[in-house]
Every structure is written in structure tokens, then in C-alpha cells.
Length: 342
Image (cartoon, rainbow, N blue to C red; front, side, top):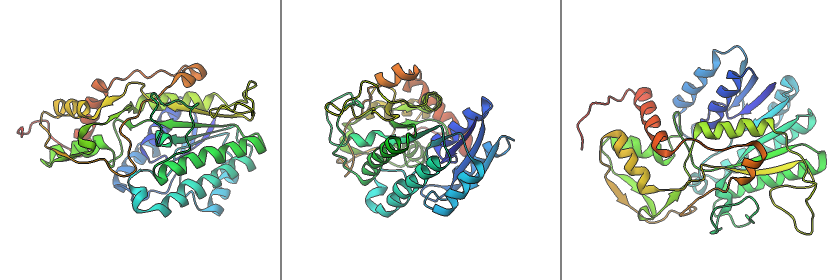
């Protein structure tokens, strides 16, 4: 199978490409290596992929319409796993145009490439942030998600709508995956676990928003990748039971599907910090702050639909995942395990 993986130097894209290469697929990797966070980490991930003969890399921006059209025409992938995006809820408050360029214009270019070249299946990253002001837990793909509270969330909701239009008009099979707080080795430096680890090791206080009264459905990267690959292999189909009088948002009369992909075990933020302190052997200095704009107090994934479709079931508890992340962080950044406790 020849598979285009966009965002291959990103956290989830890198791990997904590794998994596909390990099972014998040919992977076409795309990334623009932007400086949203440290480029050296992206290059280090990419270096893990470049040595493999069945991997080819294209440095390209999703918003480059001509470049994207040329890439699809030259490579003609059978399937596409679209994981590239301008990430981050908080950054969308500072630089909204980056989200339009990457998440809207870029996604349009991906859809057109898939349509023009007969791609079998487009699997793409959505986000748990689309649930916005919803407060009914656990979040279900059958719930209404029309009240996003950040531009990032709105751009991901827009991706789902754009994908449906292409599934309906051109019968392009599309599957959107709403990711829930992904963490693990090679993670993103803008995410809480990475920020906390770096601050604690440097003896700096950590920012704990909403005075710590938050919980997240932290999902380990290996579980996420298992769900992504299984979903890509399970080509989206139309729901024969779907009816416009009682529309199910997660499916359609077109070959279109939406799934949550999470751990299904929400964890209080203070429990995450406790486990991180144990793994690091240090006590965190906590700076309690109010809730940030665009943030939500809780996330919790209902994954029944994904379990029924592809048999996905997460297996990594946070008690296992956090020590694995800490071990990777120490190795990657050369941080000794023997240091004085604060």
C-alpha cells in the first residue's frame, strides 16, 4: 500500500509513519517543518524515518496549491492519512490566520488531491475541541458540536463539514478522528506534560489552570496510532440506516464517518502532576491560575462507535505512559536521573 502521511515530522504523524513502515507499507511523508515549536525536534523525528528505503519525504506547505497538486499527480497515493495542521488552542488566539491557511486552505488542497486522483480513503485528524460548550459526558460523535470556543476548534469542525461535502458529491470515502489529549515519547513541547516536565526539571513553577480543577482523557500515542491505522484500513462506507429526518452526525448516506479516539478514562490534572512528580523524583511548584480563554474543564471520549467499527480499545494506563515519556525525555535531552530533589 502506498500511503501519504501529512505532518510526518509531527508527533502523531511520525509515529503513524513508523508503524506503517514497520508493516511494509510505502510511505510518502509531507511536512513544512514550521517553527510553531522547536524545529530540531521535528528534524530528529524525521531522521528516524529517512533511513528507510520505503519512505520518501517532501518538504511542502499544505497551502501551496500548485505544489500539492503536483505531489498528488507524481506520487498517486492509494490512501491518505492527513495529520498535518496548525495545532494549538491557545495559539489560535494569537495567530488566527495560520489556522485558515493550514487547516482550511490546506485541507481543501488535500481533498482536491484525493478527488482528482481516486484516493481509496482519506483519514484525517479532527479534535476533541470541537465539543466546545457541550457539557454532556462522555462526549459522543452523535452529539451536536455547533458551539466551538476557539478558532482551532472551529477549523476542525469545518474540516468535518468539508469532508462530508466531498464524500457526498464525489463518493470520496472520508473518516475523521477526534483525538483526545495525546501524549507520549516524541510528544509536542506545547502540551502540558512536556511543559510540566521541562519546568520541573529546571526548577521553575508550573502553570496550573482553573486552579487544577480540570480533567483530560489522556491518550497514549501507541493507542492513538493503533486506532489511526485500523481506521485507515477500514474504508468508510455509507450508513444504509441514515435518514435526513433524524440525521446522525457521525455518519451519512455518503461514505463518511466520524469517530472519537481517546483513552475513555478521564484523569484529573492534579493526578497527572502527581504521577509526573513520582517519575521525575521531584516536587512541582504549582502556580494556580484561572481558566484560559478557549479552554474547557473536562474531556471524556465515548469510543463505542470506534470499538464497534474497528475493534479499537486503548490498553495503556497513564501510570504506564507517563514513566515512558519521562524516560524518553531524559534520553533525548540528556537529562541525568541523578539530580538533587527540590
